[in-house]
Image (cartoon, rainbow, N blue to C red; front, side, top):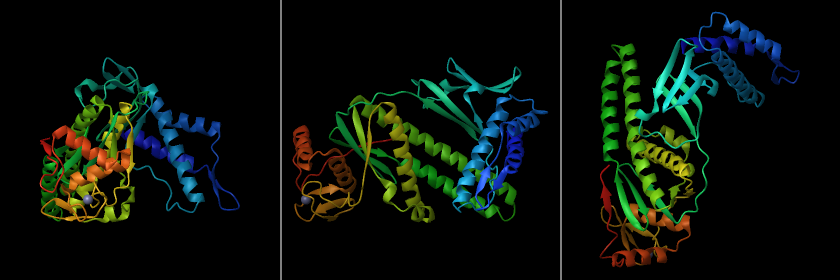
Length: 373
Ligand SMILES: [Zn+2]
């Protein structure tokens, strides 16, 4: 990684020296095939690793410079491009995949890196090919490729993601997935970080290292939790051939989110984004569609009569018009389902009544089945 980083740094210096400015002040890259060959030969001196890494380094630097030129010509580039992250792009000529094992060439005929994918049960199994790899100091990013045939869904499930649970409406039933374990992971690491912060005055180097270590662990544990949860839900939806309706979070202003000091708010956003991202690609892998709907007022609109709902008791909401009383997360998933699938609220409620023999009045609200994660 060090050698690759160094090669990139040298390549960047060389490529940047081929950037010229026209009379209008626009930047252009004038790197001829001969220049490129010279650069390649230069970098290959004393290079003991697989030669393809040099090509990969040059390509990524050219991409970096071209991206910078685009910004520069639009007046948006602040400073010159720099090689920052120690990330190695491993193209398909540098690895093989056989019998569940990924072999990445390091030094030809001498050293390679072997990763047994069978050891990671959350990885997809039935893929067609492996695309490019990104090797980083803290891990390996693998691109799995598969051609999927789109499935026409028989039903739609809807999801509402909060700080401590995911509420879902799947095949007409409300289910709830507990996220408290995930919440405790975040709280525990928050506490650790606060203690490290105190250390940072006396031992800044140590504190910085510890901080990185714990942040990475927290991320790993949280992502692992979400992988398992979304894998399980994708499996359930696959079984009943159901698509998913999710909240479109683009409406929420990203600046507000990033600046949010409130930990719980930040965590629920992280939950929502990670859950959606992971569930979406797992469903697409199965050929099932995912739809996003605008969630505005989804927990304040009566799913039965479209009247306004007001806070009632605890997490319950009550319709001002028809007096329906429902848990607020259930209101949200019912509305998302109605808005996203085109099912009329009446049909939804009738389906519920015929399945359970219960009618929705203000005395009984939807029973919720809770799953422990
Ligand atoms: Zn109502």
